[in-house]
Image (tube, rainbow, N blue to C red):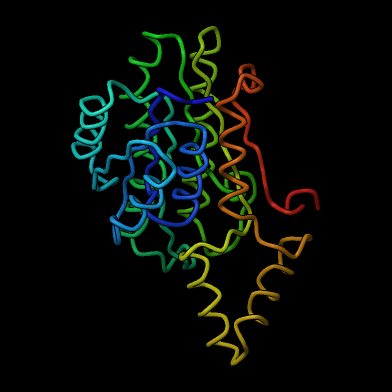
Length: 256
C-alpha cells in the first residue's frame, strides 16, 4: 500500500515508534528512523522487511537539528510522505516541585518538535496533494493524571495541534490525526513498573497488575504492533476522510 513512499518516525529506535515504523515498512514504505541508544538493531529489524532504511540522530529538543533531519530525509528519499511525531519524554512531580528545566525539555520534545517537523513536512506533501501526519499523543492528551503536569499539558497541546493541522489542510489530500494510547509496555513504562515494585516490595507481575487496575479496565497493555496497525489504517484509502481525530487505544480508560 505504501510502496514508493517514505515514512519518518521520530523516537523510533524502540517502543511505540519502532512498532509503528515496522508496521509502515510492512506496507512497503521506506523508513527514516530517529532516536538514541542502539541504532543498528532497529535498522536491521526494519531492513529485514525489505525496505530502505535511513537514520538521523536529531535531538528533538533542537529546531536546527529537526531541520537537518528533514533535509536529510528529503535528500535520501525525495520527500517525507508519512510523518509520525512520536518522540517523547516524561517526568513525574507535583507542580510546586517540578524542575523548570524538565518542564522546558518535555515541552520542547513532546510538543514543539511535532510543530517543527510538521511545518517542514507540509510543503512537499501539499505539492503532491498527499500526505499523512500522525501525532502520537497519549491518553493524557484527553484526560489528566496527578504529578504529570508537563506531560499532560504537552499531550493536550499535541491534540490541539493535530486539529489545527487537519483543518488547515481539510480540502487537500493531506490528513493529520492523533493516536492516544493508554498503558503500553515501553521502556519508559517498564521503569515505572520497576519503581512501583521496588517501592512496595512486590513482584514485577504484581506491580503491573496494580498499574493497570488503577486506570485500564481491560487489564492489558496496548502493544506497539496494535498502534502500528492503527497508523497503517490512517495511511490507507479508508482513512482519506479521517481528519483531526484523537483516537484512543486505552482498554476503556476514558470510557469510565
